[in-house]
Image 1 (spheres, rainbow, N blue to C red):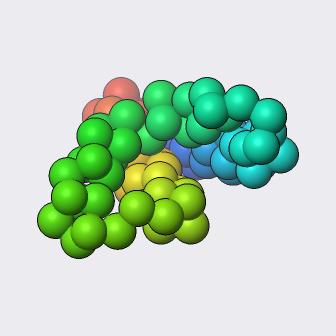
Image 2 (spheres, helix red, strand yellow):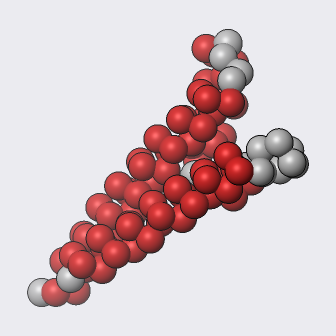
Length: 91
């Protein structure tokens, strides 16, 4: 049953990478190009605004890497929660 957790986490990470690529491709066209990435990495995108204030860093590279790291954390959380749930149903 852990295959389900791996599959869902992989699909989520694929969506995060796709949103990141869309942000990179359309960065010059529209200021809303990163909205899909921000929505997929939601709790960490809110932390990003605080981190920018504390670290006094406001660069596109920092924002992109921070949001990708948030996507990885969310993917791990999805895997851990779904793995735990699927192991409970397996018994």
